[in-house]
Image (tube, rainbow, N blue to C red):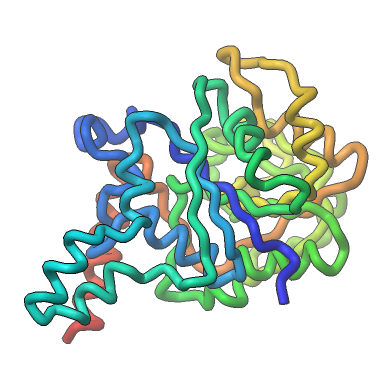
Length: 291
């Protein structure tokens, strides 16, 4: 039984990398195959044992909250026409799972977005899932791998967990890169398995020559509730934003933090080129399942 039952998904961003698609449709609702991208992220959270999901949003993105609500009129029409199976498929959230939405208010960065969820998260430890990152659901067991593994690791040693994956040399400069405490974990890093071990810190978008490793942050976190204290004390930095990485550094210094190596593959659904590749892949998998 997981002790982590709450998760935060920040969805307030405008998705400028996805224009013009995201001009009137939230990027999180753009399809990957036959479902919106955020559908897979929420399914992943639920499979890992999450019961309360907090969407940190914006006034113009209420369509995301509506997606997870029941459209009573549509439901009635479908059932009146004998399309009960389709109606049931639309109302797919388990009865014991709650989706809430809170507004970020001001665009002050990822750290600020996570902090904005505190009134709902309260004193609970919690997970954070970035909706731009969609993990491949076709090659892993979401009830045991990646986020689920991170939650189990947190339950075992109380260290906050950050998911990482090895990236190609030419992509190192695009990501936050982990600096390991012990570099002897190289076999675990390249083995494509979930493994958790200590991290000394992160270097944001380094050159390959300056990078302490090739392990990039993927967009899944499991945090001790103490992260809220550090976020509240974090001063705005680059672009006037409150950086989550600054609070993570403080958490590392005080309590220690682990990274978890990823199983499977991830897709950046917030970048046009990567999104198009992901759409094709997801569609191909689903079409193959239908045959």
